[in-house]
Length: 243
Image (cartoon, rainbow, N blue to C red; front, side, top):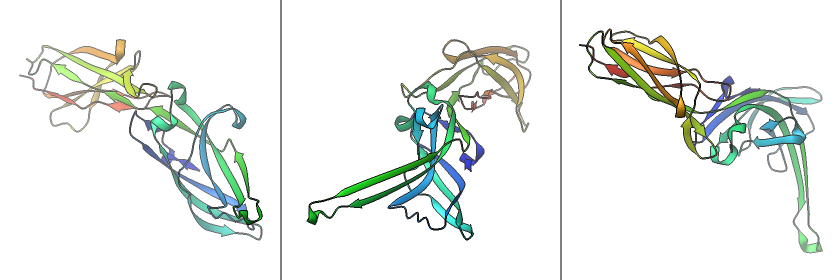
């Protein structure tokens, strides 16, 4: 199976992130999965084991499956589905950032709602297989950059400030991310790419500040590589005119 095209699932504080999932499903040839009385699919969970899972999230809709091969005893299908990760519905605190595991799920129901004989029934069965893979869920990060003064005389000192913040799922706001290495980059006027000038460590409330000598017209920006719990972030470049 492949979760989110092999990339980490990066979630902010408000927007729903749609996570595509593709996988292969093999089941007995005589097992009918009709999406009404029986269903199969994928769920993501966090915890040391299935019986001790701390959090779980799955798709709202049935998967789309195409049969790719059959044998005398089995049917193999290629399936796709989407998990819509809304932070306010699935992610509650910092502990939800990190490694999530993948499980396969099969469930079935039988019911009798005809009470003409003064009897109704409902039976529900559920199977879950864990350890089928892993994916990373990360807190979204944001970066800003502000270089001053503008314009600046060549050879004079430029002060480049910024702020590194990341999603706080408890407060539904972004909070400062301290103690993190962030690259200060520069792209000269007419150049095609940024180059790293130095590395700056974020301070209180995620504040970034450093100085450089103004040498040429161009743009400065901060870039954060991310961590195991937090996504990457790149600030918008701040253009400086050097006189």
